[in-house]
Image 1 (cartoon, rainbow, N blue to C red):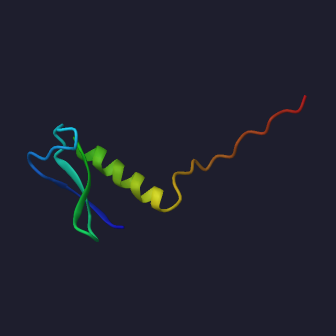
Image 2: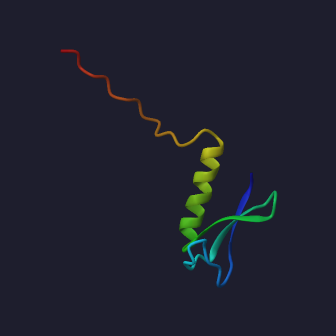
Image 3: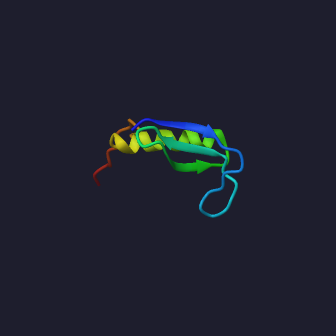
Length: 68
């Protein structure tokens, strides 16, 4: 799903806190999240996209344990 981040003056989240940076689902044209800063909203979009494609991977292998 494509998302976009927009600034909406005076927008508040469900807790009543100011959250003017909103995340909009472009397919349905609805607000799916909001944040206090643009960088937090963009990080949320990256997390949403990663979750849609299998989550985050660190790319590192676990260390092998020594057998005693």
